[in-house]
Image 1: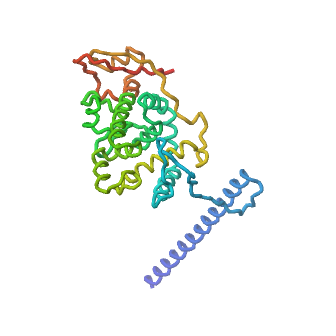
Image 2 (image 1 turned 120 degrees about the vertical axis):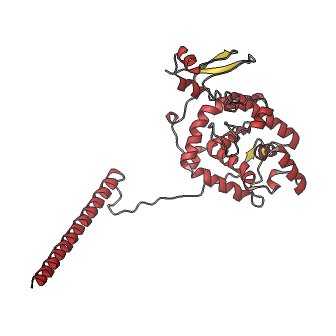
Length: 321
């Protein structure tokens, strides 16, 4: 009898819990539905008043328009030869719809292109090569898996070959003025060896010797006729895609206002030809802090600047107001 009473009590308790859970589920569902209706009402009432409450929002995604003609450094791109159109189209889609990355490149370009362009012009390098730097690093002092560094992504050996100082205290691959000059020197050599700027750009990615070897093996004289590894075969098309978007950003849906761009740096330059034993104190003496000094001069890789050879270094002192 007692056992039967316990069983009945347990079943009653179970039934009450089940009823409570059912009621709770109904309450939650009702809250969810009411919230959804309220959100829909707020969204549509704050937007276009011509839309009914139950109107659907349609997001249209279109393929970016391919230009009818395209050049790199004054040299025509054979867009409608076999496979060329699709390679360019692929890179244009990737960059046009990689919104966050492309917007950041546009912001940085506003700061750094005015620094890079005069150096290219001084060295008779076509201005389109500024987009090569953008494709290489996004105009950031990044390090590649192979150890290339800086805006122009020089490997240590190549950097030293082209006159840049690289050691534990100083790495001039992080000095945009000096590294841009080294890039110009490399590109001049590549152009002289390979005969045109398109191949010089390809050589910047793969190396002059490798491009020369592939041209000879495949018995062609044009970048667009070469069968290359995936990275180098995509390389120029990525540069062209970035150029196409940045030259006409609104056409590809990028509508930045002047306040959105990063402004050019403002600074004075100090010439130093002696060692600096403590850069923290050096910064404080010039009314800035160590962080500001290092951000403006990323080529200084430690907290000191040794200079036994009395080499002249140019140090930026940013305006902080």
